[in-house]
Image (cartoon, rainbow, N blue to C red; front, side, top):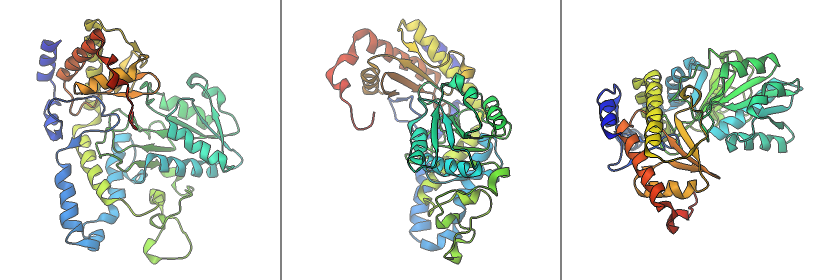
Length: 405
C-alpha cells in the first residue's frame, strides 16, 4: 500500500496545493466534509482586515475597502463552482437561516399549496426548518423515501427540499430528474449543496434549479461558522419575498425609510449587517478552490476514496459500507456502519487520524482532495486495521462523549 501510495502522490497534479493549507504535522485529516483545513493565506488576510481596515480606517472601510459589497462579491465567486450566474448567488447568514428564508419564499410563490416534501433522514436542520414553519401554520411536512419521492409529488406540494449529497452516506440524488419531476407537478425545488458545493460538479443552470443553499466551512474552507450562500434563479428573483426583511435586504438601506422595499435581484436575500471577518476568510477559501478547479478536485476525490477502499480490502478489516460502491453515485466521502463506530472514531482521533461519527453507528471519512495525499489513505487504513485488530477502541476513554460528537 505504501509503495503504491508513493507512486500515486508523485504523479498527482494537485499535490502541490497541499502546501497552501495549514495541515498539522502528524495529522491525517479526513473530516474536511465537516470543517475544511485553514488556507495559509487566511490569517494574513484577516490580520489585514483587523489591523488596517478595521483598526485604522474604521467605519470608512465600508466604502474604502468595499465591505458593503462582500456578500455579492463572494457570492459571485461561488456561483461558477455550482453552475450559476454571478448575480444568482449571494454569501450571507447560515444554511439554516437561508433555508428558512427560501422555504418561506417558495411557499408564498405557490399559493394554495402548503406541502414541503423531503426525505426521512435528511440533514436535521432542513427538516427542523420545515417543522418550524409547520408549527406556525404556514407549511405541512411530508416525508417520502428517496425511491418514492417522485410519486409523492402532487398538487399539494409547493416545494421539494433535498440535500444533493446525503450527509451520512454521501449518496447523490439525480438533480436533473428530480427537479424535472417537481416542475412537472407544479412545485419548486430547493437543493441543499452543503456536502457537494466545492467538491463535486454541480450545475444548477443545467438542471433548471429554482433555489439552493450551501455551506462555507466545509469544502470551501471558510472557517468554523463561515457564512453560507444562497442561490435564486434569475427567473424567480423578482417574485421572491423572503420573510426576514432586515435593513440590508432593502432596496435603499441608507435611505432609512419606515417601510420595507426589497432590493432588486438576489440582494433581497440579505437581512442584517454582513459579518465582514467571516466573509473575508471565506473569500480566501473560495478563491483557492476556484484556482484548483472542481473537475480535477472531483477526479482526485474519486481516486482517493477508491484507493482507501482498496487498502481497506487488503488490510482484512471488514466494515459495512453504507455509501454507494460506485464513486459516481456518492459525494466526497465514505461511510461505514459499526455498532461501536463512536469508540472506533475516538481511538483513531487519538492516533491523529481525524474522521467523524454520525449517530447512531456511522463512521465517516471525508476526502478533501485539495490537501489530502494517497499516503494519507494508506496510513489511515493501517491505523484503522490496528485499532480493530487489537481492540484498542474498547478502552474506556474512547466511549466518553463530549458535547460535540
